[in-house]
Image: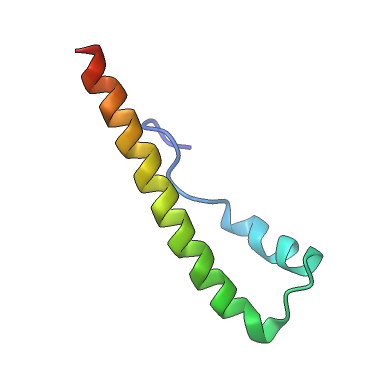
Amino acid sequence: MGPGGPVALDYLAIEPVARLLRIKPADAAAAFEALQVMEGAALTTIHERAQRELQSLR
């Protein structure tokens, strides 16, 4: 979290979760790339909603 809200996933948690889910090392790179795409989309949506809420308060 940053002063403006969420800024990124906790990347340190990715490896233990990948092990827990039994993601094969050969598939890990593709899974990480997909996770980054989802992260970017989620952060964009979160920040756009926050902007709209701020503008509605004005």
